[in-house]
Image 1 (cartoon, rainbow, N blue to C red):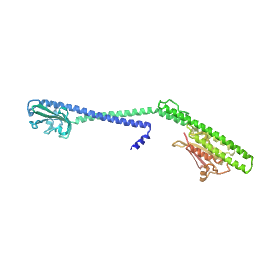
Image 2 (image 1 turned 180 degrees about the vertical axis):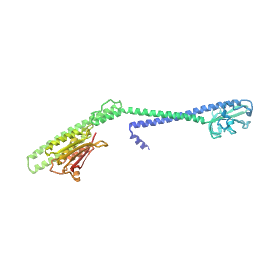
Image 3 (image 1 turned 90 degrees about the horizontal axis):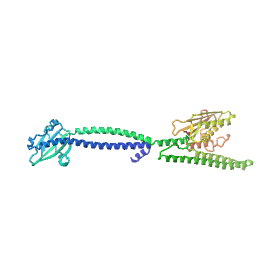
Image 4 (image 1 turned 90 degrees about the vertical axis):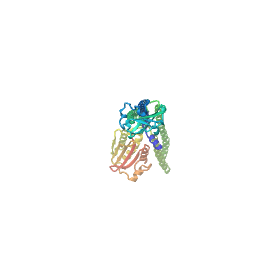
Length: 463
């Protein structure tokens, strides 16, 4: 059970933990306090009831002090009529316990010929002066509270004086007190629970503000965590700002190094290609062929490295409509002579969680491929996928060209595979799109467009 309980609390939020533990401690403390108060009040009620019975007992003892024999003594004039009502529960009894008395007894009329048992026989302990108190069931089954004392009048006269009364009054008084305590403590528990809730909400408010500030950085709405935080939260905000700055510095260095590497590799390759173009023999053709392959591979892996470095950038957000609209205008100019119709439908306010250049590369490759094969129409649509977690968007590029079969669609996204050598390009476009989408946690799927051509569906993270 311990691992399960620990796991349960480990999954709870800080607010839930504070509320749960606060509620548990509140209930425990109030419960123990209620039990303690109930026991104290019970003892107080019993003591007050015993004192009342002791008053009657003392009155009887005063009557016993006379010189008359027990049968002639005027006992029981206590001013309480219930001692005269049969089986009323209010009883007194005087028993002579010395050897000469031979068990002589006087009792109240309410006993109706019955006897009160000695409390010593019931196991009641004797206090100072030989007094005893105890509960027991009376002759009519009613619960009684009794007090008794042994009285020594001298000259060998010893009497056991007992007074009993129903314990209902004590129990009723205690039940009334417990009800008041329970109602009071329940109200107190509700007030304490509400107070704890308010304290937790107020105490954790800086963490909520910090979370929103981090979310603003992640969504690109802010560059750093701003605002004033309490002394115990401020160091965390400062460390997060340092982490954000370090992340940006690392990405900036990665961009610079990728650019330097591209320049360092492309320049020698350009020299090799230029030298190969000067000659027209088999060796030059082979060198030219391999140099082009090398250039394509360099472009592919440099693009992949750059995308991998930027895919997890904090706070990088791109508006989809402006980026894609610029691509459409460029493609319309490129394919103007073919008279292609490019339709664009982007959901307003749609934002891509990533670099603008990566979005342009992915959509640009898909749209350029569609324009190469389209008969006359290309449609680009972008919309948010509802109820997706994490949030994603879907970019669909359709054309009315010849399309691809199932096997061809699978081969098209493999790096370096070309399905038709008649179209210009390196054959890396769809593979780069698939790899870039994967780096962002998305995916590229190829299917059949409604007009019979190729449909490229690109799933990407959104804000």
